[in-house]
Amino acid sequence: MQRISRAVATAVLLASLAATGCAENKSEAVSPTVMPTPSPSPQVPLTPQVAQKAFGTYITDEDVARAAEDERLALTWTSDGQSLLTAAEFRKAAFDGDPVRRFSYAKPKLYVPKLKPDGYPQWFVASVTRFVQGKPKSNRTVLMAFILRNPSDRWHVTMTTLLAPKVKEPKILIDPEGYAEALGTDETSVLIRPRDVGGIQATIAAEGGGSVAAKVMRPSPVTTGYYQQTKRAKKKAKEKDLTLQVVYTATPYPYFALRTERGGGLVLYSLFRNTSLVAKDPSTPKPEIPSEAEHLLEGTVEGNEIDTTAALHFAAYDPPRAKNSKPQPRAVLIADDGAIVKAATPPPKKS
Image (cartoon, rainbow, N blue to C red; front, side, top):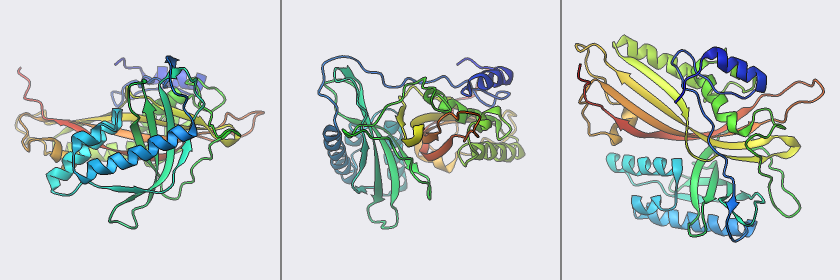
Protein backbone atom coordinates (compact mmCIF):
# COMPACT_ATOMS: atom_id res chain seq x y z
CA MET A 1 0.00 0.00 0.00
CA GLN A 2 1.27 3.41 -0.86
CA ARG A 3 2.87 5.32 2.02
CA ILE A 4 2.40 9.04 2.38
CA SER A 5 4.45 11.49 4.33
CA ARG A 6 3.30 13.34 7.42
CA ALA A 7 3.52 16.61 5.49
CA VAL A 8 1.22 15.42 2.73
CA ALA A 9 -1.22 13.92 5.23
CA THR A 10 -1.30 17.21 7.12
CA ALA A 11 -1.92 19.27 4.00
CA VAL A 12 -4.74 17.02 2.83
CA LEU A 13 -6.37 16.94 6.26
CA LEU A 14 -6.24 20.72 6.67
CA ALA A 15 -7.81 21.07 3.25
CA SER A 16 -10.68 18.65 3.78
CA LEU A 17 -10.68 17.74 7.50
CA ALA A 18 -10.63 14.16 6.31
CA ALA A 19 -7.45 12.36 5.39
CA THR A 20 -5.30 9.35 6.15
CA GLY A 21 -1.65 9.33 7.14
CA CYS A 22 1.41 7.79 8.69
CA ALA A 23 4.23 8.89 10.92
CA GLU A 24 7.77 7.81 10.24
CA ASN A 25 6.84 4.21 9.37
CA LYS A 26 4.41 4.06 12.27
CA SER A 27 1.41 3.76 10.03
CA GLU A 28 0.43 3.08 6.45
CA ALA A 29 -1.83 5.26 4.33
CA VAL A 30 -5.36 4.15 5.05
CA SER A 31 -7.27 3.97 1.79
CA PRO A 32 -11.04 4.11 2.05
CA THR A 33 -13.18 1.01 1.70
CA VAL A 34 -16.36 1.16 -0.29
CA MET A 35 -19.78 1.94 1.13
CA PRO A 36 -22.35 -0.63 -0.03
CA THR A 37 -23.77 0.89 -3.22
CA PRO A 38 -26.72 -0.91 -4.80
CA SER A 39 -26.29 -2.14 -8.36
CA PRO A 40 -29.30 -2.82 -10.59
CA SER A 41 -30.87 -6.22 -9.89
CA PRO A 42 -34.39 -7.37 -9.01
CA GLN A 43 -34.97 -7.74 -5.28
CA VAL A 44 -37.54 -7.83 -2.54
CA PRO A 45 -37.64 -4.32 -1.10
CA LEU A 46 -35.91 -3.94 2.25
CA THR A 47 -38.44 -2.89 4.87
CA PRO A 48 -38.38 -2.74 8.68
CA GLN A 49 -40.41 -5.95 8.64
CA VAL A 50 -37.85 -7.71 6.44
CA ALA A 51 -35.07 -6.50 8.76
CA GLN A 52 -36.95 -7.74 11.83
CA LYS A 53 -37.29 -11.20 10.30
CA ALA A 54 -33.60 -11.28 9.30
CA PHE A 55 -32.54 -10.29 12.81
CA GLY A 56 -34.76 -12.93 14.43
CA THR A 57 -33.50 -15.64 12.09
CA TYR A 58 -29.90 -14.72 12.82
CA ILE A 59 -30.09 -14.82 16.62
CA THR A 60 -31.86 -18.20 16.50
CA ASP A 61 -29.39 -19.74 14.09
CA GLU A 62 -26.42 -18.22 15.89
CA ASP A 63 -27.48 -19.81 19.16
CA VAL A 64 -27.93 -23.21 17.51
CA ALA A 65 -24.38 -23.06 16.18
CA ARG A 66 -22.89 -21.88 19.46
CA ALA A 67 -24.81 -24.43 21.52
CA ALA A 68 -23.42 -27.17 19.27
CA GLU A 69 -19.97 -25.53 19.29
CA ASP A 70 -20.10 -25.83 15.51
CA GLU A 71 -17.69 -23.26 14.10
CA ARG A 72 -18.49 -24.05 10.48
CA LEU A 73 -22.21 -23.57 11.05
CA ALA A 74 -21.62 -20.32 12.94
CA LEU A 75 -19.56 -18.97 10.04
CA THR A 76 -22.44 -19.47 7.60
CA TRP A 77 -24.27 -16.57 9.32
CA THR A 78 -21.34 -14.13 9.32
CA SER A 79 -19.12 -12.44 6.73
CA ASP A 80 -16.08 -10.19 6.44
CA GLY A 81 -14.46 -9.14 9.72
CA GLN A 82 -17.17 -10.81 11.79
CA SER A 83 -16.24 -14.16 10.26
CA LEU A 84 -12.62 -13.66 11.34
CA LEU A 85 -13.64 -12.76 14.88
CA THR A 86 -16.10 -15.64 15.13
CA ALA A 87 -13.52 -18.19 13.97
CA ALA A 88 -10.95 -16.81 16.42
CA GLU A 89 -13.46 -16.96 19.28
CA PHE A 90 -14.30 -20.61 18.60
CA ARG A 91 -10.62 -21.54 18.41
CA LYS A 92 -9.79 -19.73 21.63
CA ALA A 93 -12.63 -21.49 23.45
CA ALA A 94 -11.36 -24.86 22.20
CA PHE A 95 -7.78 -23.99 23.16
CA ASP A 96 -8.83 -22.94 26.68
CA GLY A 97 -11.22 -25.87 27.07
CA ASP A 98 -14.17 -23.50 27.62
CA PRO A 99 -17.63 -23.56 26.05
CA VAL A 100 -18.26 -20.99 23.34
CA ARG A 101 -20.23 -18.01 24.61
CA ARG A 102 -23.97 -18.04 23.93
CA PHE A 103 -25.99 -14.83 23.82
CA SER A 104 -29.47 -13.66 24.67
CA TYR A 105 -30.88 -10.52 23.07
CA ALA A 106 -33.46 -7.95 24.12
CA LYS A 107 -35.80 -6.28 21.63
CA PRO A 108 -33.68 -4.52 18.99
CA LYS A 109 -33.89 -1.06 17.50
CA LEU A 110 -33.57 -1.50 13.74
CA TYR A 111 -32.20 1.25 11.51
CA VAL A 112 -33.29 0.44 7.98
CA PRO A 113 -32.23 2.76 5.16
CA LYS A 114 -34.58 3.23 2.21
CA LEU A 115 -32.47 1.72 -0.54
CA LYS A 116 -33.41 1.35 -4.18
CA PRO A 117 -35.76 -1.63 -4.43
CA ASP A 118 -33.98 -2.92 -7.55
CA GLY A 119 -30.45 -2.96 -6.19
CA TYR A 120 -27.93 -4.83 -4.07
CA PRO A 121 -26.45 -5.03 -1.56
CA GLN A 122 -29.12 -4.40 1.03
CA TRP A 123 -28.11 -3.55 4.58
CA PHE A 124 -29.38 -2.38 7.92
CA VAL A 125 -28.05 -1.76 11.44
CA ALA A 126 -29.43 -3.15 14.70
CA SER A 127 -28.88 -1.71 18.16
CA VAL A 128 -29.70 -4.20 20.88
CA THR A 129 -28.90 -5.12 24.47
CA ARG A 130 -27.03 -8.44 24.50
CA PHE A 131 -26.33 -10.75 27.43
CA VAL A 132 -23.83 -13.58 27.76
CA GLN A 133 -25.88 -16.53 28.93
CA GLY A 134 -24.99 -17.54 32.49
CA LYS A 135 -23.61 -14.08 33.28
CA PRO A 136 -26.54 -11.90 34.45
CA LYS A 137 -24.47 -8.70 34.70
CA SER A 138 -22.95 -9.01 31.24
CA ASN A 139 -25.47 -6.83 29.42
CA ARG A 140 -23.95 -4.55 26.78
CA THR A 141 -25.42 -2.56 23.92
CA VAL A 142 -24.16 -4.00 20.65
CA LEU A 143 -24.39 -2.39 17.22
CA MET A 144 -24.72 -4.97 14.46
CA ALA A 145 -24.50 -4.41 10.70
CA PHE A 146 -26.39 -6.91 8.51
CA ILE A 147 -25.82 -7.28 4.77
CA LEU A 148 -27.46 -9.14 1.89
CA ARG A 149 -25.24 -9.12 -1.17
CA ASN A 150 -27.44 -10.76 -3.83
CA PRO A 151 -30.86 -12.36 -4.30
CA SER A 152 -29.60 -15.92 -3.77
CA ASP A 153 -27.61 -15.06 -0.64
CA ARG A 154 -28.75 -15.07 2.99
CA TRP A 155 -28.44 -12.20 5.45
CA HIS A 156 -25.08 -12.11 7.21
CA VAL A 157 -23.75 -10.14 10.16
CA THR A 158 -20.73 -8.37 8.73
CA MET A 159 -19.69 -6.57 11.92
CA THR A 160 -20.61 -6.05 15.56
CA THR A 161 -19.23 -3.51 17.99
CA LEU A 162 -19.92 -2.75 21.66
CA LEU A 163 -21.14 0.64 22.82
CA ALA A 164 -18.75 2.06 25.40
CA PRO A 165 -20.08 2.02 28.99
CA LYS A 166 -21.97 5.17 30.02
CA VAL A 167 -22.01 6.43 26.42
CA LYS A 168 -25.34 7.51 24.96
CA GLU A 169 -26.13 6.12 21.56
CA PRO A 170 -26.79 8.88 19.00
CA LYS A 171 -30.44 9.17 17.98
CA ILE A 172 -30.92 8.04 14.41
CA LEU A 173 -33.19 10.17 12.25
CA ILE A 174 -36.27 8.12 11.31
CA ASP A 175 -38.83 9.29 8.77
CA PRO A 176 -42.61 8.88 9.19
CA GLU A 177 -42.49 5.55 7.31
CA GLY A 178 -39.93 4.12 9.71
CA TYR A 179 -36.84 4.41 7.51
CA ALA A 180 -33.41 5.79 8.32
CA GLU A 181 -31.30 7.89 5.96
CA ALA A 182 -28.08 6.42 4.61
CA LEU A 183 -25.17 8.84 4.18
CA GLY A 184 -23.06 8.78 1.05
CA THR A 185 -19.33 8.11 1.10
CA ASP A 186 -18.49 11.75 0.38
CA GLU A 187 -21.23 13.36 2.49
CA THR A 188 -20.02 16.88 3.34
CA SER A 189 -22.73 17.95 5.76
CA VAL A 190 -20.86 16.08 8.49
CA LEU A 191 -17.43 17.00 9.82
CA ILE A 192 -15.59 13.97 8.41
CA ARG A 193 -16.66 12.25 5.23
CA PRO A 194 -17.86 8.74 6.20
CA ARG A 195 -15.20 7.13 4.01
CA ASP A 196 -12.45 8.97 5.95
CA VAL A 197 -13.45 8.31 9.56
CA GLY A 198 -11.28 5.19 9.80
CA GLY A 199 -8.30 7.00 8.32
CA ILE A 200 -8.58 9.80 10.87
CA GLN A 201 -8.62 7.30 13.73
CA ALA A 202 -5.65 5.38 12.29
CA THR A 203 -3.65 8.59 11.96
CA ILE A 204 -4.24 9.52 15.61
CA ALA A 205 -3.35 5.97 16.70
CA ALA A 206 -0.05 6.37 14.84
CA GLU A 207 0.78 9.97 15.76
CA GLY A 208 -1.00 10.67 19.04
CA GLY A 209 -2.73 13.76 20.33
CA GLY A 210 -0.28 16.05 18.54
CA SER A 211 -1.52 14.86 15.16
CA VAL A 212 -3.47 17.33 13.05
CA ALA A 213 -6.11 14.61 12.78
CA ALA A 214 -6.77 15.07 16.51
CA LYS A 215 -8.30 18.43 15.66
CA VAL A 216 -11.38 16.64 14.32
CA MET A 217 -11.62 13.59 16.63
CA ARG A 218 -11.62 13.51 20.43
CA PRO A 219 -9.05 11.63 22.50
CA SER A 220 -10.23 8.18 23.58
CA PRO A 221 -8.88 4.77 24.57
CA VAL A 222 -9.02 3.72 20.91
CA THR A 223 -7.37 6.82 19.42
CA THR A 224 -4.74 8.48 21.61
CA GLY A 225 -5.03 5.44 23.88
CA TYR A 226 -3.78 3.19 21.09
CA TYR A 227 -0.86 5.54 20.55
CA GLN A 228 0.13 5.37 24.22
CA GLN A 229 -0.25 1.59 24.26
CA THR A 230 2.11 1.29 21.31
CA LYS A 231 4.69 3.56 22.96
CA ARG A 232 4.66 1.44 26.12
CA ALA A 233 4.80 -1.82 24.17
CA LYS A 234 7.73 -0.62 22.06
CA LYS A 235 9.65 0.44 25.17
CA LYS A 236 9.02 -2.94 26.80
CA ALA A 237 10.13 -4.75 23.64
CA LYS A 238 13.30 -2.66 23.39
CA GLU A 239 14.22 -3.64 26.95
CA LYS A 240 14.27 -7.25 25.69
CA ASP A 241 16.31 -6.30 22.59
CA LEU A 242 13.22 -6.76 20.41
CA THR A 243 11.76 -4.45 17.78
CA LEU A 244 8.03 -3.91 17.66
CA GLN A 245 6.16 -2.40 14.73
CA VAL A 246 2.44 -1.57 14.89
CA VAL A 247 0.49 -0.46 11.82
CA TYR A 248 -3.21 0.38 11.50
CA THR A 249 -4.69 -0.07 8.03
CA ALA A 250 -8.02 -0.04 6.24
CA THR A 251 -9.90 -3.26 5.54
CA PRO A 252 -11.63 -4.33 2.32
CA TYR A 253 -14.91 -4.63 4.22
CA PRO A 254 -17.95 -2.37 3.82
CA TYR A 255 -18.78 0.42 6.23
CA PHE A 256 -22.16 1.91 7.06
CA ALA A 257 -23.28 5.46 7.78
CA LEU A 258 -26.66 6.70 8.99
CA ARG A 259 -28.00 10.20 9.53
CA THR A 260 -28.56 11.14 13.16
CA GLU A 261 -30.92 13.77 14.49
CA ARG A 262 -29.64 17.36 14.21
CA GLY A 263 -27.59 16.56 11.14
CA GLY A 264 -24.80 14.31 12.37
CA GLY A 265 -23.91 10.77 11.39
CA LEU A 266 -23.32 7.35 12.92
CA VAL A 267 -20.54 5.51 11.09
CA LEU A 268 -19.72 1.82 11.56
CA TYR A 269 -16.40 0.63 10.10
CA SER A 270 -13.39 -1.61 10.69
CA LEU A 271 -9.59 -1.44 10.77
CA PHE A 272 -6.76 -3.94 10.89
CA ARG A 273 -3.95 -3.66 13.43
CA ASN A 274 -0.83 -5.45 12.18
CA THR A 275 2.05 -6.04 14.57
CA SER A 276 5.51 -7.47 14.06
CA LEU A 277 7.79 -8.40 16.97
CA VAL A 278 11.33 -9.19 15.82
CA ALA A 279 14.58 -10.24 17.47
CA LYS A 280 17.08 -8.77 15.00
CA ASP A 281 20.18 -9.92 16.89
CA PRO A 282 20.67 -13.72 16.43
CA SER A 283 21.98 -13.91 19.99
CA THR A 284 18.76 -12.42 21.37
CA PRO A 285 16.18 -14.95 22.67
CA LYS A 286 13.25 -15.49 20.36
CA PRO A 287 10.17 -13.41 21.14
CA GLU A 288 7.52 -15.04 23.30
CA ILE A 289 4.11 -15.79 21.82
CA PRO A 290 1.57 -13.26 23.17
CA SER A 291 -1.05 -14.93 25.37
CA GLU A 292 -3.84 -13.46 23.24
CA ALA A 293 -2.44 -15.24 20.14
CA GLU A 294 -1.53 -18.66 21.61
CA HIS A 295 -4.68 -20.31 20.25
CA LEU A 296 -3.72 -19.29 16.71
CA LEU A 297 -0.20 -20.79 16.76
CA GLU A 298 1.37 -24.19 17.30
CA GLY A 299 3.21 -23.08 20.41
CA THR A 300 6.67 -22.70 18.88
CA VAL A 301 8.53 -19.86 17.18
CA GLU A 302 10.48 -21.19 14.23
CA GLY A 303 12.27 -17.98 13.40
CA ASN A 304 12.94 -14.73 15.20
CA GLU A 305 9.62 -13.01 14.43
CA ILE A 306 5.96 -13.07 15.47
CA ASP A 307 3.37 -11.34 13.32
CA THR A 308 -0.27 -10.77 14.30
CA THR A 309 -3.35 -9.19 12.76
CA ALA A 310 -6.30 -7.94 14.78
CA ALA A 311 -9.70 -7.17 13.30
CA LEU A 312 -11.18 -4.11 15.02
CA HIS A 313 -14.76 -2.88 14.69
CA PHE A 314 -15.82 0.65 15.61
CA ALA A 315 -18.70 3.08 15.61
CA ALA A 316 -18.19 6.83 15.63
CA TYR A 317 -20.45 9.81 16.00
CA ASP A 318 -19.63 12.25 13.22
CA PRO A 319 -21.05 15.70 14.13
CA PRO A 320 -22.61 18.08 11.62
CA ARG A 321 -20.27 20.61 10.09
CA ALA A 322 -20.61 23.86 12.04
CA LYS A 323 -22.05 26.91 10.32
CA ASN A 324 -21.74 30.65 10.82
CA SER A 325 -18.39 30.47 12.64
CA LYS A 326 -19.91 28.48 15.51
CA PRO A 327 -17.59 26.20 17.54
CA GLN A 328 -17.01 22.91 15.75
CA PRO A 329 -17.55 19.79 17.90
CA ARG A 330 -15.17 16.91 17.18
CA ALA A 331 -16.07 13.38 16.17
CA VAL A 332 -16.07 10.81 18.96
CA LEU A 333 -15.55 7.04 19.03
CA ILE A 334 -18.52 5.51 20.82
CA ALA A 335 -18.11 1.75 20.27
CA ASP A 336 -15.34 -0.76 19.70
CA ASP A 337 -14.69 -4.49 19.66
CA GLY A 338 -12.08 -6.78 18.20
CA ALA A 339 -9.41 -9.41 18.73
CA ILE A 340 -6.35 -10.95 17.14
CA VAL A 341 -7.55 -13.10 14.27
CA LYS A 342 -4.29 -14.16 12.60
CA ALA A 343 -0.82 -14.99 13.87
CA ALA A 344 2.32 -16.32 12.20
CA THR A 345 5.92 -17.12 13.04
CA PRO A 346 7.82 -16.80 9.73
CA PRO A 347 10.95 -18.93 9.31
CA PRO A 348 14.29 -17.13 9.49
CA LYS A 349 15.17 -15.15 6.40
CA LYS A 350 18.14 -16.56 4.51
CA SER A 351 21.00 -14.10 4.21
